[in-house]
Length: 465
Image (tube, rainbow, N blue to C red):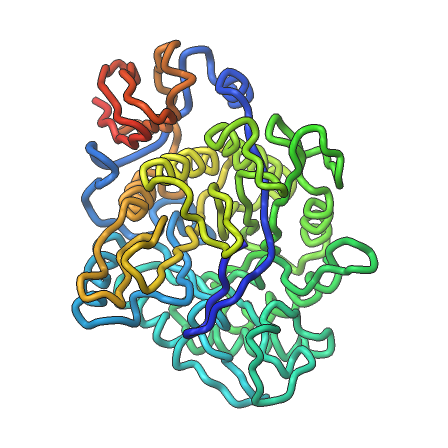
């Protein structure tokens, strides 16, 4: 579904997600808001998603919730030209977003090439970047060294990255997780594994949730042994879905956007019943279906995030994290470059709105930095460029949203004129309103008692008196 990254290597990782959504009238009814009013969002200034002011990445909620940030991938701000990396450091230091890093792949070498022999140089580099820029650090405990999954000690075959450790090495992986937790005592949040990679049972045509849960429990206990204050979550399942009318692996979790694959729900239920403990539940997903359909369109499709979130909160009772989310389908090269940046940013804003409405308190944008000048959806210009490191539109949105809707923020209703309801998405708090124009044309909007014009796909923040 996205490109996996390690050092200078890249290759494809399978996986998709799904979905689509309802018309706005149905959306309003299902959200429980009275006609003409829509639930809202929080904090900070007006203007176009550039709200100023610093705050700790974790503001509100408890320490099982970190807020809205991003995941580092193969290329990130710890490498590049001196000028560009310095600019990126200043950008990240100003925003102080939660930042996630995997222990192997996505910019990190094999952490234990041979049993008891460790290489943390690249992981150290990423953790140091997070520390010096003031972000809340999160570590995803994936993937496993080759010798834990049938390979030779000292050998690293990146084409085998998706393989899960063999059951006889589950304890070895848990010990590695414990060593990492002790190496970085300031890291308090850990995600166990990534998308159940390597845990699909081809014979049973379902997830091997028994094996994953056994691994999870060993890792959970080891992390709590390292420090009881460590916060641990799973199972990081991809919430795949099928379009309406397709009964493939149909489940009870459905909506106008389609139906969630019941095998994903089975995995979550088993993990939830049999886990040793958890501080939060983690999933990943996309708004489009398994066959890359937006139902009924790319904005309405994001309603899937709200419906899935409500189900997860009811099922587990845990704080909800989205480890990844996607709104634009990928091409044959796994690139998402078919939309204009305004359209992409507007649909991403709609997705963030729906995740919050579904009860999510934390999420990590998969930051696809590359080495060139053209990087659709990136947070900053490539630090491999002399003039790199500068803020891009998605960073403006993510940073403003992170400030406005930290964990624990109460949402408020907001008036929207009847003829504007099909055209905008809104989220509000006592202090401000996020408004998204879903149309590829100029509109005149009447929101929260304020009249104003919006450009095509404009994302705007309104102050509330």
